[in-house]
Image (cartoon, rainbow, N blue to C red):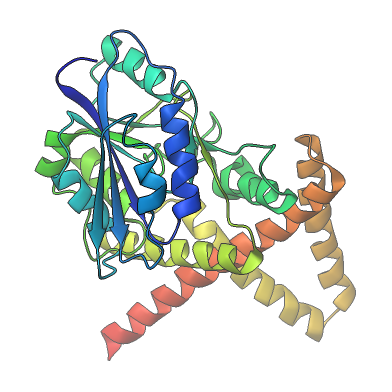
Length: 332
């Protein structure tokens, strides 16, 4: 390896020792380019009650690891900032604790940076089909397809918004990260999008590398998935307030869908239930067909319909209720 550290992989974690072990194993299994870039890993525990120290210790002989522990939970933004402040690498790589790096991840990144010194970039998040349950496959499709998120997470070449690297797969020059101000500490959700917007404003838009892939372990149950998308809706409303003009129609569409559904229910109760059930059935069949066309089994396609409904409902409620709460607070 070269003497200078090239990459600092920063990973915030809260009570995920098993997932951390899978991530570290994927780092150990990297097919490294030549000359081999020197890298380090910084695991920043955010008030965990399930210490990952035992899992981390297994890999300390393979590559440098810093295990940073905070007794109080401070949130992902502040935890990532602290990890970045301890980093020695030229580039910061931010990933979540529940991801697995593709074997060529560092090779792909190094090859790109050898040709082009990109200051800010990221890639898509995928799944490992052999490890994912039927529900996780459905959630992944709902999170990345053009019809549900407009491809804004980098899951498709067709995107309805400029690509913005997320902290499950983000690489940024360390000096630039600190110059921009890092992540806003009090943002519980959406801190990565906020950072990407601030980078764009300073003339550093995020660059999309389709082959810079990670595998994400999606939410394994409906309740946690609803909580995730509800929080995402709230975060998007906060981002709209922090960055006027950043909201696109794809962000508001779930809110419009929720209110349209409420209106449809009222119309059905007042005029015709057949109309309500007919339109609803049509929507379900369209989503089901979309899942089948993309090669999923009937069971996964059905779960995709369920996941899409949860996603639109949760995100729409999160955005809409947060907006109403702010307007009410402003009037008071």
